[in-house]
Length: 201
Image 1 (cartoon, rainbow, N blue to C red):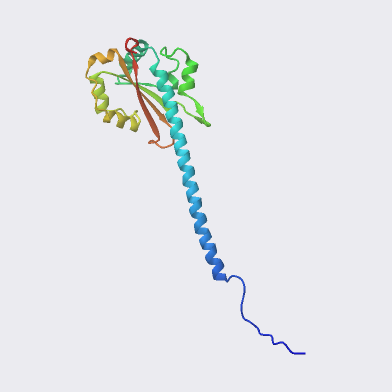
Image 2 (image 1 turned 90 degrees about the horizontal axis):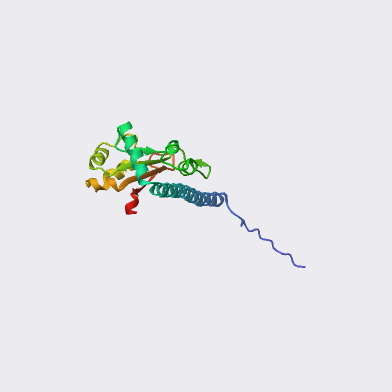
């Protein structure tokens, strides 16, 4: 019988510690990148959801305001402007008892809704009535009150029409609806419309 020669080969099968550490580092970098991507996507989705809800609320409120009786709104606006000495009238959910609104329940449902467990109260939804009056418009544009949201001030300031035709105040009332949907002051959506006299609707 022949003797077999056994040779010892100094080969190892498997990974070295450096290879394992390197693969863990690469996996960590990829995982962190994916995590950041999904986190940013979630923030962006939440941001857009809030903005979309705000725009839809503002559209509903604007639609409701545009259907109100022009003469009632004009009379209410004139009385409030005379009492407050301001070139505009601010309406929110606390104003729903005013004679301007036929149904207080509908008014509260529009101006104080709860959507996605967020209560859009008086601090979040406001309606601003501005007459088509050149003098009042200039006053509002040049010296906007502190109570106006910043985005509304910018919108009014960027308006090019001067409302100089005094006949317009007999037929139109400008309406701005602001809805704050986030915690920051710039998280505000502004929609603009008009309440028109029934004779030109």
